[in-house]
Image (cartoon, rainbow, N blue to C red; front, top):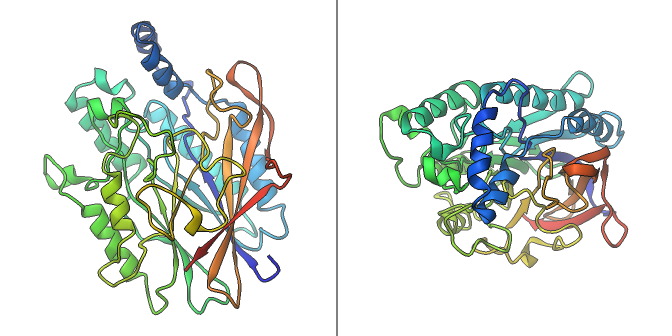
Length: 392
């Protein structure tokens, strides 16, 4: 670390699963629970996914962000990005989406330094695509209407979009760049089982009944070339909701939870762009699984040591668990509500970028809750940070 200087902090949150007090579908939920209790395996999985947020977590996380940005003399002088990788809500209803967007704005304000707020980047998840109802119980017309409103009102960007960019100090024009693609399917059956896929974004706006293949991946390659500049050796990050590399154990039957075309997407991410920039991205940041990956304390020291299925030699996948969802089934152990903080360091004499990952969490409380403030969690070795180097 003596030869590396800090320059960028990313606060990665995901799967907030907010449920507004104005959400009005409680009779539906009671009926759904009566049906699901007769299907034990599916019952627990669906109930866990439908769990609402813990209201006490929201102000606690605002305080934490303020503590590690505005109140920290080292990091308040750097760029600070807040990256949300989806499932802002549980049911995709407008009141919850509104409260979720307001909360993200509050986090951004908590990262304000000298009148300049932190930079916020947010994508939607498969639960945000629920039409305020269980997808399998809705018709195509209702799903289509919700899809149009969700994208027009709450997520108006088209993916992929121009990246966030942060100069690497002493890097001769090099940057850290953050891109994003959409993995969410607005589909009765596939979204019921949380399946994702990278397909053409907002294809219905062009009057097409089905998406064209590889449009997002082609556009992503074009954007990477466009922002390559004279210094092609940028560090590129990709935000997705569904992980490209699904953390083990991968579901035995690949009809639920996973990114359906992950092998194809990973192959493209590891191949050169038309402008011969490779790999297309070095780091994929995702949510969706509600569990940290790699496990705390097991992060490889270099990207080359990552054995992530389908991803290449200089690529890594990070996944973060739920920021504030209630943990009714006790699946999240000692870190039931969590975020990860990535701190980027550069050296004036080396081409590598050193990234520290820190896990922030609240302590487990009774009945699926969490208690106390968000704090950095120590690894088994007693440190709060893990380090991974990327060759760029």
